[in-house]
Length: 419
View 1: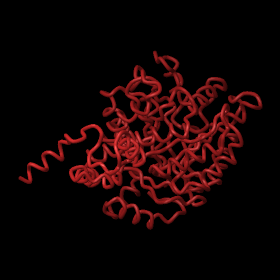
View 2 (view 1 turned 180 degrees about the horizontal axis):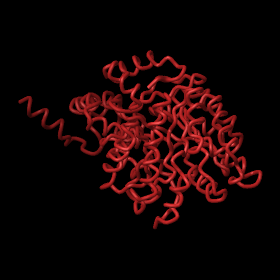
View 3 (view 1 turned 30 degrees about the horizontal axis):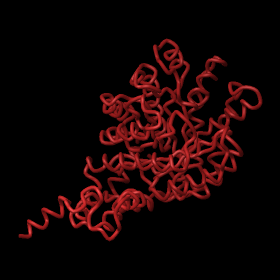
View 4 (view 1 turned 90 degrees about the vertical axis):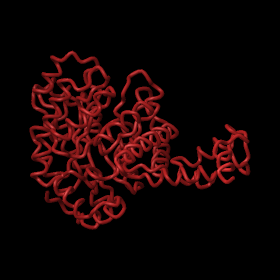
């Protein structure tokens, strides 16, 4: 696959060295479209490879809402995300000066930044009258503006077609459409009786992506919003459309990844990953969670981490974090931290099962055997929290922890093994 203006050779070398993979193999997978490297030349973030043979990456969603426009709080969320290892962030702002917020996040982020341009376009039209009054120019002008600002990857819901909407209308779905961008386009299609402009004018979208060198993240507007709806007709119809669009993007030399379902029961996670990889010919798979049960509001970072670990083990490449606030409210900075760490654990667990990253676990185990607390803290995914928990009821000078005290199993066996 030919790519646009950015000279990716240096980035491929850097990623190969960092991830311990063969440079020529990585270059081939990049050319084939099985790996993407988000890098808008306006932004030029640090090198990040997403896809086959690489470590599982994690994205953090940031952004204001109509009810809470605290820009400094969003910048604090960005700082927390970077401190705790986010590989990318997305600005999903829907309140305040959206252009200014996006530009500030891009200028402050050393990692790739993604957006969903149709959010801003739809909201702008809604303030004037109704979001269904937007036209093709409104949609594509929004994409161009985000590209010019330096956005590295964009979610575009190109797979929602009139035919797919009719299938949705006939389906026995419980939650219909839970994707915000997807709902905008479904409403637009039903109101105007026309084809989705992003599908009908996909060749033009490819021209823009190639010109501005951003990755297309093909959105799953019909992702299931509850486990009852998982792997149903509308979801699969959209995925088949996305497979066609992946092939067209590759022919045009445009980097593309595919977004995956939100709510999927545990027994269907593997099938969903394998289906996407088959239909989309190995394109990088970007999944929200998936959440494996619907009954845990306040704990959905856990339900998502369970699904994310399994999805990544079976081949998903990019996990979109979920916070404890999912389905309930705009997340706080602490929610962002909890959600990110849960997804980082899921990604690492999958990497280990796929043969990567075990050295860190070994270093932690060796430090535990030696009761080397500083060594354990160094390997901990959240050093601060580990220190805080151990400090409860015990001094740092103590050899063990407050759970076992003098009857520490490691200490006892080590003493008698010496004898």
